[in-house]
Amino acid sequence: SLKMLMIRVRIRVNPDLNFNPRALPTHSPYKIKTYQLISFSSCREEEESLRDKIRADHERALQEAKEKLRKSREELQAEIQTEKNKVMEDLKKKDPGPKPLPPVPMPKVVGVSDGEPPEPDVKEKRDKIREMMKHAWDSYRQYGWGHNELKPLAKKGHSTNIFGNSQLGASIVDALDTLYIMGLHEEFKDGQEWIEQNLDFSVNAEVSVFEVNIRFIGGLLAAYYLSGQEVFKLKAVQLAEKLLPAFNTPTGIPWAMVNLKSGVGRNWGWASAGSSILAEFGTLHMEFVHLTYLTGNPAYYQKVMHIRKLLAKMDRPNGLYPNYLNPRTGRWGQHHTSVGGLGDSFYEYLLKAWLMSDKTDSEARKAYDDAIEAIERHLIRKSNGGLTFIGEWKNGHLERKMGHLACFAGGMFALGADGSPDDKAGHYLQLGAEIAHTCHESYDRTVLKLGPEAFKFDSGLEAVAVRQNEKYYILRPEVIETYWYMWRFTHDPKYRQWGWEAAQAIDKYCRVSGGFSGVKDVYSSNPTYDDVQQSFFLAETLKYLYLLFSSDDLMPLESWVFNTEAHALPVLHLGNITLPGSEPAQR
Image (cartoon, rainbow, N blue to C red; front, top):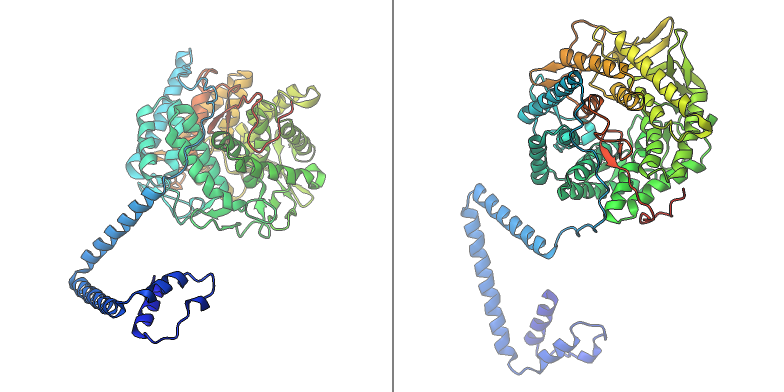
């Protein structure tokens, strides 16, 4: 060391130095070594030798510096890169990388292929949906590969702030399980290769915790369960570890956004005085339970159960969950309740947590039943024209407006009908059918036969958008999702008919040579495009259409639960197995 060198030089240059090694403190690292140095008789010779060595080193360094100065900038950069690579290689040798995940029993994978319908006309429609998926994928493959999404008219990549500033291939990850279910295995393989070679979460990007969870973790886990390819599981876990710092808040309610590199989190500036959003922090349970199951790490399960327990202790105005909760104080933000945007998937995940647990998570089922009872009492109304709709509660007032996003609830009511308290299964199946009918009307009352973003029920107008900024259709899946669930539970042919109407309208008005685009006004016979092919169009809209025209043995609902991005996760038939960090389930 440098310090050791200095002591040696001082001792030899000053042989008469009054030096007492015993005077050194007992913890001194120099005591014994210094004492040994003094005992040598050839101090002068060593001193000369040391000076010669220093002089030689100095000359060599000067010579190297002169040579460096003669080199071009490119040569220097190449040298620096070589050194960096060497350091990285050395680090890799020292660090064996992530520990292999513990082996866990693979849930039984049922009904993941075929599902060909016996009726020729239904098969023809299903084939058309597959062709639409192929057009969307091939266009993205050609013009936007590796980007998060596609601009189908400009024929180039597209991204939004939910993915930060990074090219994470969101459309690839979101499309994987749809490709697999449709039997498009070559395309699936292309996606897998891109993920193996390019998907890297060690990027300086601020992403939406909710969006990245439902699209990426959900998409990767679904691809893993369907294909058995380990790479998907490993990538899902790598990303999940990057999301955990978002939970470092005073209450454990996560931030809306987190930087994947630094782990720093924050909330959206527009959300009620720095609040977190119910549909965001309440839509993690399905994926995080599977992460704990696959990794043996209890942290994921504990994080989502902590959120559930905190919410259970809180007072709810009229039994309703407000959309905003402050992660610093643990208090509700403004009292705005919605089954559409900001609230929707929170309720969905209460029901699906119960279904995914093989109906053992009775706590989740009770929370769902209580929430739905309050929603029915305060938010669900019938219009003068007899249409059942779900309004939005804002500061003690019911706004008679329903969003396209809320149309998923028809399917949710049907899915949750079996297991309802007080023999209300028939009631909830009927409620699902009424919501499906209302949402179909919102499509049927437009020029394009595609539904608007939001529609009102007052002033004589019903199921129609009033504001210009609510007349757009961005390839959303919720109405088709409800058609599919209603078809599965009733086999009423009208749901296939309605789904086919929507598919034809999408193909006619949203299809362009470079993919599929949203439209800005569904009431205009000559609409303008928004020039975005959303990743959820491949993940959800086309998947639900394909399943609608498939037989029920493809992705049977007894074995699979779809996350809010339509990514299929298997029911965990845990039996007597207890998730790490959990208490034994009670039936």
